[in-house]
Image 1: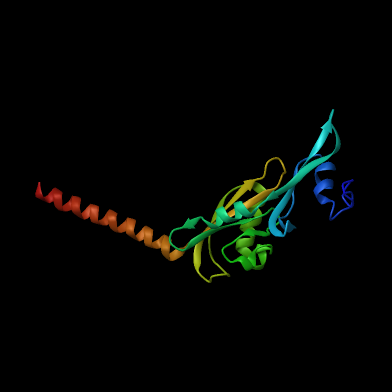
Image 2: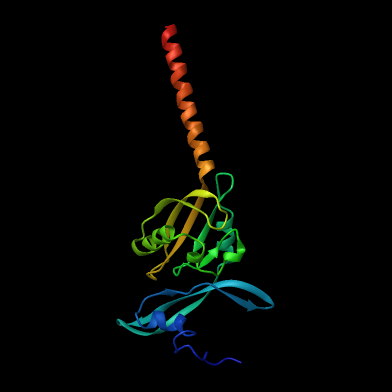
Length: 193
């Protein structure tokens, strides 16, 4: 019972400790499944350096349950059938309506142009919009790729919004129709005056 945790000082299992200790900055791990009390949780470990007079003495961290964040993202609806999903800093799917994709690299499910946009957003922190077809649903859509800075970790997660193209165009067409009808109404009214 108790005592120091072993294996924390070796690469791999010890990354949660070594990554914040060695460069002296906070770190967040790729989410993973963790069993506790007979329940399985989806968690990520976050840790930051402990410093004294500029020197790093060690690291302090803990596990954060990601389940709530994942469920909130799943609750985002874009138009009628569009959806949102989130990727961690390594492109691993954290939340997606197709649960088979969770904990897998998104790059297995998107085309090279889409992958380049995701990677660019990770690099420079800029949101981007692109037209693509989902390899998961086969539906053409407009995708918004929105990077999210994770505290002072130097890592970004990405929120992706998928708006099916036919639903986007239906809204655009409704707007154009309203503008045309308003123009015709104004033209008719101007001839009556």
